[in-house]
Length: 166
Image (cartoon, rainbow, N blue to C red):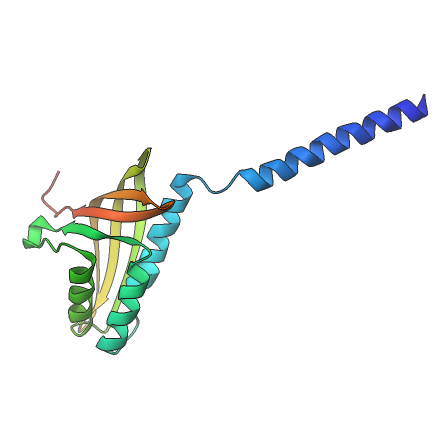
């Protein structure tokens, strides 16, 4: 009788062990988790503490953004009549803005995230802290569209709402 019990316990343990191994192997991050990780990385890439060298900053942004942003990305900021198109233009504008600030920080607070196959819509709050002459914090709502290319989530478009937008 003990022999049968110990064999049953071993069989159950083996099944549970195999199940845990299969779960670990086949349960990668969800698309939602990968999009949030992309947002976190994007915030890390565009922030700076002191004005970096523009040439080095441009090269670093170009390389890092190529992994996070679609080449044909569009950013709309209607409040400022600002609509840069393409990753290269974003890099150029980010480098130009670097010289006007001592510090720039950005973080994202996701409010809604919906995945639709190979695209996703994200509504979030964008919180920025800039320091030109003195620190200034700002928060805006933004709607982002991500696309999945080569199994990576890339920012395809963003529309930043002004204070008066609904």
